[in-house]
Image (cartoon, rainbow, N blue to C red; front, side, top):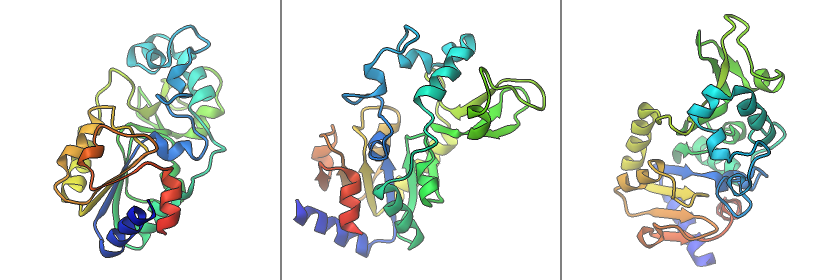
Length: 242
């Protein structure tokens, strides 16, 4: 295993065109629960008698906003969580000119907090919110400090998080941006994701290079296509590399 990590380190040392594509496993090491893991959010029925996937759907949001926001505040917003070694390592690689972009399925803002600048958030973020009536933007504090359904202080409309709910489509501008980075990358590092959620997982198919790296605690459907596959905590791997 140490030989594989050394090989990855050598690749990184020689490259200035690295792209990182990450999922929930990048944030679980900071203490944020994942969705589909053994102890993930989706493994437990919510206190409201419906499963979390239903609560986080567009239809449920439209019809049950009080429950939606109560669930988000209790289960998805973690204002006391800090970035871990993987977040900081990626920010460092960008700072020294090696990493071109972080593409993430996470909605927790930890990459930005660690210092990453070019972050493509495929599923949006809880840290940006907007009024669905007038478009005014609000930060996460506006949501956490409000009671019940957050209301716009300008027009009285409902303020919602800028995340992609179930039944909503991904932002195709961001998808195309991610495809461009991946298709032109020298090294594509995929970390903390089982590559089971589409269409995001399908982005791997746009990679044209021969340095595909998968870092995940469990196996993925793409392990046999990877040039390097490491089944360890992603934070530990990046600590050894840097």
